[in-house]
Length: 255
Image (cartoon, rainbow, N blue to C red; front, side, top):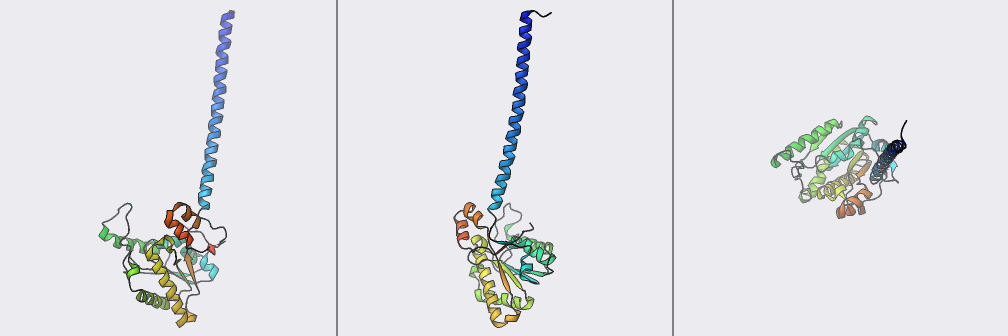
């Protein structure tokens, strides 16, 4: 039989063990609760961040080309990689609507900033030119033109000559829909973007005057997400957001 002192010692150790078990159980509950809170906060953060790219009043369209009945789409841009802004538009125009898609890019992107550096700077234009052609092929673009205007210097070229060149190509390809930047913001406030889009608008205007039946029916302007630009892109982002209209349509990007 246990002596009284031994019994007390036994009961004390049992109580301590039981307390440790309770503490362990509480710790597990705390960890589980903390993990659930972290996961909930993570999903809330992702939802909030995603909302910064949304335009609630825009009509969600499966295809802009489809909405406008376009069977031929011409994207007019300044640099290689600009076409990545409308991958969804180009892919869906071809796959969903059977439209022919084409791209005109004003420069070869030779003045781009390399982050990280992938080539000698003097050869960057060759590499970006090749990447552009490869991207266009992957997007199912039927034809691409890459012109030799200076990257970062499109604003300094002969505007009239550039507009005429665009108008002549529009007359050859006869697109129903032109896709370019919004002229006042250029998507990123880039001077090349603004000039290219202004020239595209002017070329369409002139073509409508000279040949209204063969001119494009519509221009789709690319806009940057206003809330995201206003909150996260500094003063430039605020300028971009202030110089953009509300969008009429939004569609998946097919990234």
